[in-house]
Image (cartoon, rainbow, N blue to C red; front, side, top):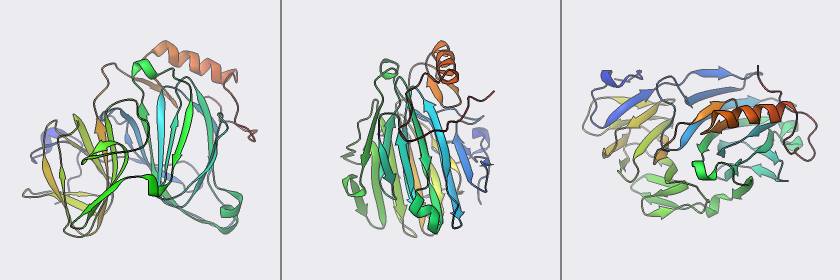
Length: 303
């Protein structure tokens, strides 16, 4: 049985609070995203306020990704690719190619602008693009921190392997490991690759936790129900359970301590203050944000 519901009362699996099936959105030219957060059922899991699966997209020769410069405030963005490459540019002067297994961590704080494109070389040959992009809301005291960027190669990211399960810790702490990324609150973000029949015990190390099934399917050991690719499975606080892969599977584990204040979100802006959102909107209209070196385009503020 595959559960296709987002309503907790319909669930009959111990330890599971919600299952959300995100809608697929076409951003143009066949590039699709599946947005798990925010949703009508749930806005955040721990400090995570935005979760997108990008693709899988296939670009022909001469095609590519072209996300023009756009602003952010009050959050950190995390870009993690499974396949393909993105060329990142931002207003603090960063120019960085992002490749599979690497971690791109950009803290917007008081305001940053960035673009995401396919490089000239990759555009000529075409290829695939598949990955995850998440936003982590900053604690209130860090919302106006200076914008910053860090990039970590795949070999810098800690991992552990056991009996067919490999966990790569992208950010935060879990399973006795701590990621080298500088985070602003308690959190976990991990890539879990499982062979057929492999198991992973979801521990109560963080208050809020969820898994997003990237590929394959998993079940809760000892209970009926299978969670398939494209589903966000939210666990109840303090619940500990064992996931078992039904065939090869890949999951993203996310969560952490929830922020005490409500977060407002408009377009690419996140803040604990509605007035701060309005100020950011006005600043972007008037082009008061620092520009991205080498870029001459921008995405206008939505109506």
